[in-house]
Structure formats: C-alpha cells, structure tokens
Length: 430
Image 1 (cartoon, one colour):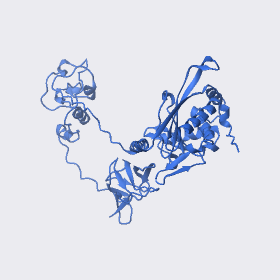
Image 2 (cartoon, rainbow, N blue to C red; image 1 turned 90 degrees about the vertical axis):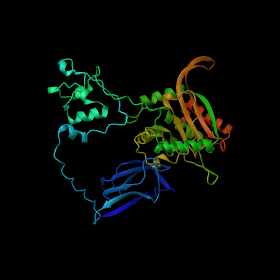
Image 3 (cartoon, rainbow, N blue to C red; image 1 turned 60 degrees about the vertical axis):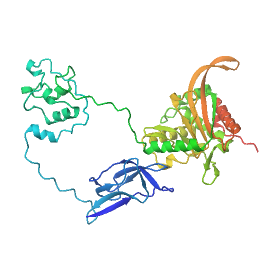
C-alpha cells in the first residue's frame, strides 16, 4: 500500500488560501477519481474540488470554516501498490451469540443524554383492560422491540412505567406515541432551554460579512433618493408581457431599469468605474457589465450581465433570469459572479420606501429599486393616482461628486418616466 497526499490547489488570481465549506467524504470512505470530495470558498467564488485519484480516505485537513493555505495538505488517500484503490477492510468478525433481548438491545440503544428531554405523554388505548393501565413500575423483563427501546431511550422514557397494549402487555410503538394522560411513574426532568445558539460564520456568509465590512469601512458612501413616476413604465411592462415571446418569462422592472441605466451611463462614464486601490487608479470601462444583486439560500450573490449595452430588452430579461436561477441553485461559475462595473439591487415587493445600499467594491455606484405603489400625487395641475417608485442609490463620494450623482439619477428618472427613450441611444453632441 502507498499513500497519496493531495494539497490545496492554486485556484488562480493570487489566491493564497481557501476556506473549507463542506466535506463530502470522511476518513475511511472509498472514493473514485473525479468524485466530489470538498467544497471550498476563495475570496472570489465557491469551488467544488474533485478527487484526483481513487482510493481510501486516510485523513482530511480542516473543518468547515477553517482556512487551508495553497500547497498545504488537504486530504490523504491510501492506494494499492499498482495505484488502484485500496480494497475495503476485511469483513468484521462474526458477532457473538445473541444474548437475551433485554441485554442485547442495550448495545443498539442511543446513550442517554446528560439531561434527558421530557418523556412523551402516554396513555393506554381506551379498550385496554384495566390491568394494562398499571400505575406503578412493573418488575421483570419489559417486552418490546429493539426499535422501541431505542425510541424510549432517546426520549428518556422508563419502559417499566409504560402500560403495554400488545399481547401479554407487550409495549407497541403506539404506546409511546399516543397522546393523552401520562402514565404514572417518574419522568425525566426537562432540560433547561439554552439561552443562546452559536452559529459559525463560514462560506458565502463569511465572505459577504468581510466584503460588506470592508466597503463600509473604506468607502465614504453618498446616498441619494429620488421618486420616479413609473405609471407609463408599468403600462409598457403590462403591454409587453401580453405580447411577449412564447418562451420569454414575465417581464419585471429590473430589465427595463438595466436598459435605461446603460443609456444613461453613456453620459456619465465616471460611474461605470472600478477603483484599483492598490495602484490608486480608476479604471473606466466602456463596456457595461451590470451586476444583479440576487438573494440566494447561501446569502447575497451578484451575477453579472455582461455587455448589457449591446443586448435587447428580452435578452437582458432572459440573462437576468438565467443568472439568478444559476446563483440560487449554486451553479453559477466564477466568471458569472465577478467583473461587474456597476450594480443594480431590488428588494421587489419588500422594497420599502427607501434604502441605503452598500456599494459593491471596487465599483463606485449602486442603484437600488424600492417598492412601486399607487398613491395620489399632483400630476399636470391636478390630484391623480399615479404609480410611484423610489430609486435609492449610493455613490463613492471620493470619485463621484454629489452634483454628478444627482444628475445621473435625474437622467435615469427621465428615461423611466418616458419609457420610449429607453430604446433610444444617447445623442452625443460634437
């Protein structure tokens, strides 16, 4: 037999370590080549690591939440002389002769916890004979199955106090589950309910915490909120949904806002920028790679609609939907989750009146959509019911002046309130 030590691989882009998110194998397991063995998280993305060889797992390094440096041992495999997987261990010796039931079942029952939970409420069936409703512990051997002994042990039930409804007083599963008055006899004391629960911050949630903290600590946020009359936009959205292509999903405000934003950024290129802090350089992008903040079971992710300025409305809608589904299903690739130049976030129906979104560093701007509601406003000199939605945005005040931020949002408002202009490119003056 020989051993093979697999080290944490270099996952690219200057990664020096990776966090263990979840092991999919343990010492003693047999694995085959290319079988998933561990999920790790870098500062860029989650990565599934397959087994490089077939063999038996001897040891693993690190628990979920621990970081392992690139090049450090990650997992050790045992191989045969020829490099094939080691054969399973020899079969265990035959079990000794069966003991009487009351003794043998003690080896399969779960060990009693230090503080036992309350016993289940017990009662004999209504048609049980009076003798079956004993009120004192019975001497002698209790008749029941090994499974019921395990259930009783886990629940802290003294089986000698349970009235069995089976033949000869045998305790059935129903006797442990039937609600009703308690059988007489001592029951385990209820454990104290813990006042706190500790949850280790790992994986995507840790990465979110680190990035949010860094962004708020290093970026002087400038927030700007403006209300937008989206009555006409809603009318267009409803019309387009009625006439949408057969294979297209329902259109939300998000693709329309992304389309409008790409038009506006043509006049405000200083907001389509990444700040390279290490070099002290602003990197202005011609292409508009729009990040879409997406809530997933693992936390907030930002998949990227690349070159949004070159896509049509239905293409933007389809790409947002595709990326959101992949992000929520934990199938998004690293390339789909990095490289945005500006981010749009929406709380949908939970959008509230206003919010102060945190900038997705190293970007310098983020646009937030709040809830659209109908309310009375003064419109063309009269009170009318209009559909109003607030835009809540944040800018890096080091590089985007307040005037420019306000002007950009006003330009975006103009496009959204006159939605036909969303589909007209900006006319640049000579």
